[in-house]
Length: 94
Image (cartoon, rainbow, N blue to C red):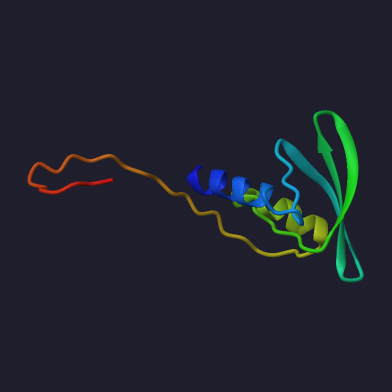
């Protein structure tokens, strides 16, 4: 969440970037050296032409890859976080 918040703030201050939150990409087409994205946000659909397309879908990365035509075999990785207590630990932990 920290990286997301930092990125959102940094990108919102850049006049060459637009940040779309609560938005789903529903179509992707490559057009010469640009990308045409069809998106849905709050019940409305729209189109935007962009120079770069960053796929940050996490475990659902295949959705955008398939729209673009990058069919890949994928592995699913599960991650976990644990809380532990170390009784002999001296020092400060973040």
